[in-house]
Amino acid sequence: MRIVLGVTGGIAAYKSAELARLLIRNGHEVQVILTRAAEEFIRPLTFASLTGRKVITDLFSASSAIEHIDIAREHDLLLVAPATANTIAKFVHGLADDFLSTMYLAFRGPVVIAPAMNDQMWDHEATRANVEALRRRGHTIVPPGDGYLACGTYGAGRLADNEAILQALLPRPKDLAGQTILITAGPTQEPLDPVRYLTNRSSGKMGYALADAALDRGAKVILISGPVNLTAPAGAEIIRVRTAQEMHDQVFGHLEPATVIIKCAAVADFRPAYPANQKIKKTGQPTAIQFEPAPDILAELGRSKGERLLVGFAAETGNLREYAVAKLKAKNCDVIVANLVGGENSGFESDTNEVTLALRNGELIDVPNAPKRDVAERILDQVVKLLQ
Image (cartoon, rainbow, N blue to C red; front, side):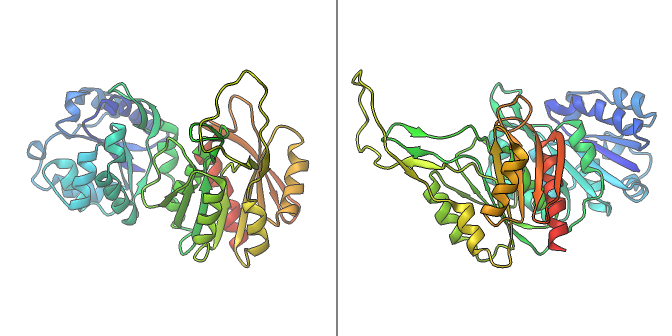
């Protein structure tokens, strides 16, 4: 493809040099546009050396008065990486005060946006609304990853890895358009007393990856999330809960419009039967806590799903395939996504996952270790097939 690579003013701009090199290695032609702010972080000569093409830096230093129109007509795809909050806002509101924003208004091909910024800026309601507006236009958003940021904090805002950006350049089918997908994610917390609770190691990353992938494929997404340190994908209806009972109530309160249910959350199997009203004091003696079963949301959904497609998850420590098939039948699911937990590169807290999909027709599909977003796409591929 003939790709315009827009680079805007953030510390992640230096990563775009490697991205440009990878694009060229993959056979693409690359025309780089730097904003003035981007030039404070990386020089045009770097990109000119990598691409063999003149780097455009100023609307009024262009070779012709309509070069922004020519560039828009001559190229197949616009990729902005990194995209600052300021540039995203310009695109949304049609502001055209530099070459990149002016060219954007004239461009009619696919647009891929890879944001990068401080985590608080990324989570601000204005930024979230702007990102959702771009998504509604049909643009592909490559969400930032979690990590240590230039400001010294840890959170969402780091430019996505080059592999994720390159993957986003492939045409994304809108094969879930018209579907409403209800997704649960994260852990639950069951109180022992006003200070303590029981929980598990679920980070919510798999469920949030599924929500983001489903949005990109055209679905409406209702995301019911336990306590996590993640930013919900722009465009998802987010409902936050804490306990298994709260998750149960919200799932069934939002069930009616759903055509697909993906139960990715790690919901407690048991909860304290009698949570203390006051903090339990240390006495030096053994303490017994009585437990009762928490609501089995997946089983109840299996009994009441009707024509809806139901996808469940099974986190296991052994006998993966056997337990997956057993759970598929016991819970009346259409798909069970089973994975072994406790390893370094899959399961809870990891950025990657390795799963086995158990299907109602008896088929077992192994999905090798990959980033959770890629695993999400493989799961949704099966959802699409079953819907068809």
